[in-house]
Each structure stands twice: as structure tokens, then as C-alpha cells.
Length: 196
Image (cartoon, rainbow, N blue to C red; front, top):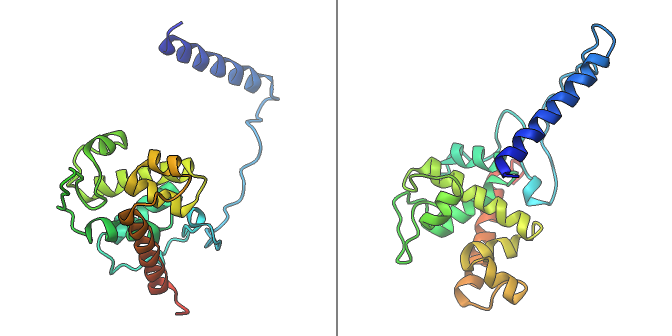
């Protein structure tokens, strides 16, 4: 059976089951009562993936170049905007037209194949580049169970190198890359800390 045919049957089956459940309910009952609106809160945690501001007003520094895009994409992917901004600072120093000798393009220095994989059509467009780069960071975050150092090492040296060495590969460039990004993230976090 083809994948398309299987998906169609699965969708039909789930619709049929849902309709039979609804038809079995007493007249006028359409499910549980709606939940009351709960105002958004600021999540405080040491896990970078969960350091997402869910309040309407962002604590992320609007003076950071491309701050609104970074904030939005970080939030969509469950990453701290400071983390994403730190990667951008290390990769391109916020230069949207940056190109590397290896063929990486834009703010987050994505290879065209990675950009396409993550849904970008134009890596010189800051919004597409940040969206694709942040999705890729989230992908790596999930691959390495939220281990920041492994995520950053994989972003720089590749997943295979991190798996082969069981952590940060002993490449001078990668070791320095990870240290720089963590320092930049800490700097961005201090800038955004109202108590600092």
C-alpha cells in the first residue's frame, strides 16, 4: 500500500471514529467546557530551550539587529533568543550578506542544502535565514538532548563529528566557536536582565 493511500485511509478512519464519538454524546454536548483564559507568564528555568518569554512584551533587547525576527523564531522553536542571537553574532556579526569560502550564506551561515531542508528559498533574506537557522538549531537541540555545547559544536563542525568524538570535537576552531557563542549568549542575557 502506498504512503499516500495509507495516509488517506488513516485520515478517513480518524474522521469516522471522531464522528461516531460525537454522535454518541447527548444532544447539545460538544465536549468539555472551555478552559478559562490564563494570562501568559514568564518561564524561569536554567534550560535554554525553555527560556522563552511568553509574555506580550519581550525582554529581548530591541537594539540587537534583527531582534524582532530573532525573538519570533526563537519563540516558535522553544529556544532562548539570546542563544540564537549569539550564534548569529559568531557566524556573521549580523551581516545579512555574509558568505563563507565553504559556501555558507547569510546571518546564520547556512549551506544552501541545509537552508532548503529547513524551508528557506533565499538565504540572503534575513527572515528566511533566521527562520531556517533557528529550525536547524532546534533540530540539533533535539538530536543532542538539549546539550548546548554539543548543539553548538554540531552547528559548527557537523553532527557526525560530534557523534564520532562523543562531544565537542578536538578542533581548535570548534572549541573556540562554542566558547565564543556561550560568552555572547551570556552577554546578551546580561543586557536583557533588568536587575543587572
